Figure 1 (tube, protein in one colour):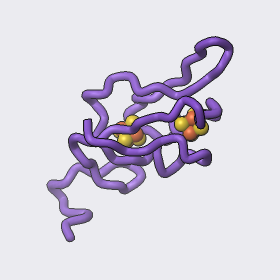
Figure 2: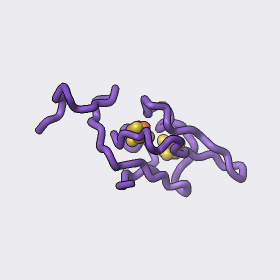
Figure 3: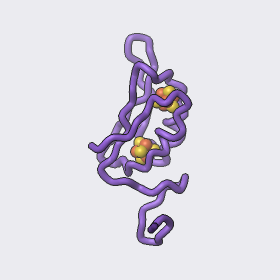
Length: 84
Ligand code: SF4
Ligand code: SF4
Protein backbone atom coordinates (compact mmCIF):
# COMPACT_ATOMS: atom_id res chain seq x y z
CA UNK A 1 0.00 0.00 0.00
CA UNK A 2 1.47 3.32 -1.07
CA UNK A 3 -0.89 5.63 0.82
CA UNK A 4 1.01 8.57 2.23
CA UNK A 5 3.98 8.13 -0.10
CA UNK A 6 5.61 11.57 -0.52
CA UNK A 7 5.35 11.52 -4.32
CA UNK A 8 1.65 10.68 -4.29
CA UNK A 9 -0.86 13.51 -4.69
CA UNK A 10 -2.89 13.73 -1.50
CA UNK A 11 -5.82 16.01 -0.78
CA UNK A 12 -6.24 18.12 2.34
CA UNK A 13 -8.72 15.57 3.63
CA UNK A 14 -6.15 12.84 3.13
CA UNK A 15 -7.81 10.81 0.42
CA UNK A 16 -5.44 10.05 -2.42
CA UNK A 17 -6.10 11.29 -5.93
CA UNK A 18 -7.59 8.83 -8.37
CA UNK A 19 -6.86 10.19 -11.84
CA UNK A 20 -9.57 9.44 -14.35
CA UNK A 21 -12.37 9.33 -11.78
CA UNK A 22 -14.97 12.04 -11.31
CA UNK A 23 -18.13 12.59 -9.29
CA UNK A 24 -21.41 11.77 -10.96
CA UNK A 25 -24.13 13.81 -9.25
CA UNK A 26 -27.65 12.39 -9.20
CA UNK A 27 -29.75 15.55 -9.50
CA UNK A 28 -32.86 13.65 -8.42
CA UNK A 29 -31.26 12.87 -5.05
CA UNK A 30 -29.34 16.12 -4.60
CA UNK A 31 -30.97 18.53 -2.16
CA UNK A 32 -28.57 21.41 -2.79
CA UNK A 33 -27.28 21.30 0.78
CA UNK A 34 -23.77 22.31 -0.30
CA UNK A 35 -21.76 19.86 1.79
CA UNK A 36 -19.92 18.59 -1.27
CA UNK A 37 -19.13 22.15 -2.36
CA UNK A 38 -17.41 22.79 0.97
CA UNK A 39 -15.64 19.42 0.85
CA UNK A 40 -13.81 20.04 -2.42
CA UNK A 41 -10.50 21.69 -1.61
CA UNK A 42 -10.13 22.60 -5.29
CA UNK A 43 -13.45 24.46 -5.33
CA UNK A 44 -14.67 22.60 -8.37
CA UNK A 45 -18.26 22.16 -7.26
CA UNK A 46 -20.91 24.87 -7.13
CA UNK A 47 -24.63 25.09 -6.59
CA UNK A 48 -26.78 25.83 -9.62
CA UNK A 49 -30.45 26.69 -9.70
CA UNK A 50 -32.56 25.25 -12.50
CA UNK A 51 -36.36 25.47 -12.43
CA UNK A 52 -36.26 26.67 -8.81
CA UNK A 53 -34.35 23.55 -7.74
CA UNK A 54 -30.81 23.84 -6.41
CA UNK A 55 -28.25 21.15 -7.05
CA UNK A 56 -24.50 20.65 -7.20
CA UNK A 57 -22.55 20.70 -10.46
CA UNK A 58 -18.93 19.96 -11.31
CA UNK A 59 -17.19 22.90 -13.00
CA UNK A 60 -13.67 22.39 -14.33
CA UNK A 61 -13.84 18.62 -14.56
CA UNK A 62 -10.29 18.41 -15.91
CA UNK A 63 -8.99 19.71 -12.57
CA UNK A 64 -10.79 17.04 -10.54
CA UNK A 65 -8.35 14.68 -8.83
CA UNK A 66 -10.94 11.96 -8.32
CA UNK A 67 -10.29 12.05 -4.57
CA UNK A 68 -13.98 11.37 -3.75
CA UNK A 69 -14.03 13.79 -0.80
CA UNK A 70 -17.27 15.22 -2.19
CA UNK A 71 -18.92 11.81 -2.52
CA UNK A 72 -17.97 10.77 1.00
CA UNK A 73 -19.39 14.00 2.47
CA UNK A 74 -22.76 13.88 0.71
CA UNK A 75 -25.37 13.00 3.37
CA UNK A 76 -27.88 11.96 0.71
CA UNK A 77 -25.68 9.57 -1.27
CA UNK A 78 -26.26 11.62 -4.39
CA UNK A 79 -22.67 11.36 -5.63
CA UNK A 80 -21.09 8.27 -7.09
CA UNK A 81 -17.60 8.15 -8.52
CA UNK A 82 -17.21 7.04 -12.11
CA UNK A 83 -14.39 6.83 -14.62
CA UNK A 84 -14.41 9.85 -16.89
S1 SF4 B 1 -13.49 14.16 -6.44
FE1 SF4 B 1 -14.88 15.77 -5.66
S2 SF4 B 1 -13.77 16.68 -3.91
FE2 SF4 B 1 -12.26 15.55 -5.14
S3 SF4 B 1 -11.38 17.07 -6.55
FE3 SF4 B 1 -13.08 16.05 -7.64
S4 SF4 B 1 -14.88 17.36 -7.28
FE4 SF4 B 1 -13.32 17.93 -5.76
S1 SF4 C 1 -23.71 17.11 -0.61
FE1 SF4 C 1 -25.04 15.79 -1.89
S2 SF4 C 1 -27.11 16.58 -1.57
FE2 SF4 C 1 -25.70 18.15 -0.84
S3 SF4 C 1 -25.36 19.53 -2.63
FE3 SF4 C 1 -23.74 17.96 -2.69
S4 SF4 C 1 -24.56 16.29 -4.03
FE4 SF4 C 1 -26.28 17.60 -3.40
